[in-house]
View 1 (cartoon, rainbow, N blue to C red):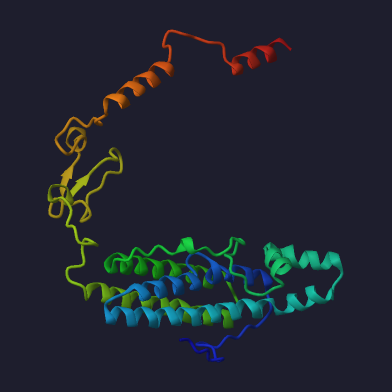
View 2: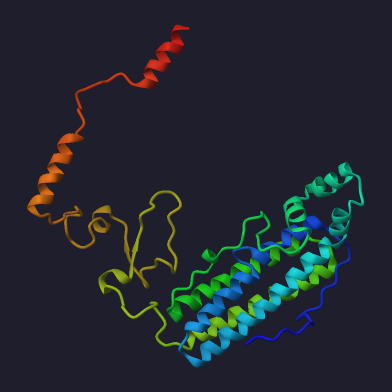
Length: 294
């Protein structure tokens, strides 16, 4: 059960209306790394979680993400307030209204015309929010790693938004939201390492003869060695004959077919065979010839 408190988790102060900036803020409202995506990711994970500690954490963070959605949506609405009234009441001449929606790099015409200046569940490019943003897989060690990455991406988007705005009130609110992403990363990482063992994700350990092999498939200038491929941590394979057909076979595919399947496959191969000796005239060549004659 949810109950709404009309006070925001963090106060929002906007110095001046700016519909173009409001449009950028939508990236964290309905974008792939935004607050709605985070809330839905953690809420659905919590519903399927059997561990009481992780379930409680996921519900807490999911609910907080909804409060962050409210904060960022309020920022969007406040930045749009002036333009919303002017557009709805036709307060300016048509040409001036058009310039206000398109001038100085402002790309807010979609949210202004279609959504009336309110926060829309789209990203800053107008793409509608999608449940495809949620990539939970139902394994706690897999999902916690994904959650850490999701919080990292959201933190980076907030940081970039902070770097392009000059409204101190908006910058302050975004700084709070960005910082909460850091806190959530820490909680998810602590939860991950509270599971032992936690690597690899899932139950199956993998084939030991391949688990610690580093394959140097991109060779040439720029080859580097480090802890990600060191001899202390991996068996470094660089020769092609060692990383082709690593199972020890010949590297060629084979399939067992029934007599009937073999018969119809041979018929298909016969019907669609190419003639390596032929040199037919193509439509492209006829077009070239015709052009050359003009």
